[in-house]
Length: 434
Image (tube, rainbow, N blue to C red; front, side):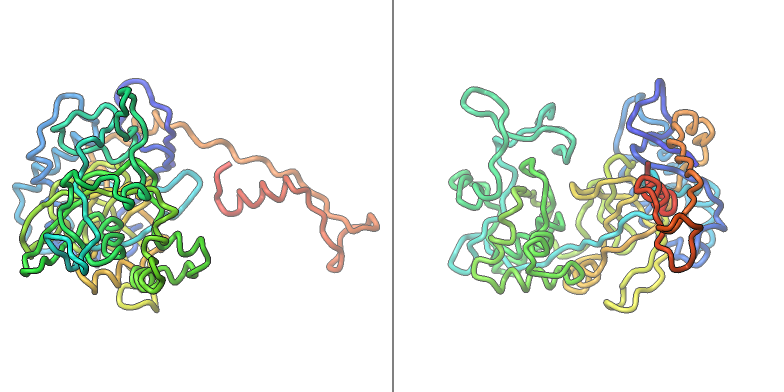
């Protein structure tokens, strides 16, 4: 097993995924791999390859990026007629590697979708919640206007004050109080705050305007604050049990209270801005990779992963209904990201648009095992040289457990174990980091 920390190795690193552990396995070690629809996975993968082919980069690309591009060139020349041919393509060009945080076995899966809500081009008593585009004074340290995409995370985001200093941008409370009024930033107006919350949470939306025109919007930028979900706020304030926090219940609860949606978001200072991507009711929203997402095959991952990387997910998920959970063994393609998607084994599964997709996405917050498909041309032995081994496990001293009388322990005697030894044993027993 290889481990990778945030420390940068000298020279060119085959892999650099902070805080992760990698374990090469065989294809036969993947539960459900032969039964997946590899042709459907290939279609999603090929769409990402077309986007990767359009992006020109310099000679300073990482080895994994170069290797993914090489495989994409093969994919664009292939026209698999069936699932077996597609499966052979993946097996010949990739090697399966389990990935997780150091000391852990499973990661976390959630779901997302494209909300469809009603809206208006002009404000009125029914539609009075603005959906904003990116303000002109919103800047990110080191970002040059006109670049491909506004930084999602990892940089300082704010605005310039009268002295020219970079200060934090207006938070949600200030924006909802009208600090952006008069700047003509409104894309459209929505009926209530829960519709805005849904679009900001999912990162995209389809707004049906008063004349029936479908307006498509996608995430463009944010105000620099960490996001706290409406569901998380309701759980924190004891208004909802954690296991009840589906998108449907969240919207019902926030709408039920007077000014509920505003109060639900009050403890979050984050705010998301959007851009218009089209006036069509066809197709899916475009992910961060620049391609339309594929329901059931596209995932959003941490940005430290390369777009276009295939992941095989092993989990049990409530797809059909809340109970029971069913085996979910599926090849997914990394084609999106999000500010809340953090960690080497963390993914948001895209399910499509509308209420049905919302119900599935809202039910998913489950553990899962992640298998990353790495290009075969990458040398895993060389990669291992750059990845320090984890700290050795502490040796547990042999403890003699005695009863209060000093005699050897019996069934009725109460064991006495040193706290440090108990903690060390717990870490060893459950595979926790030291």
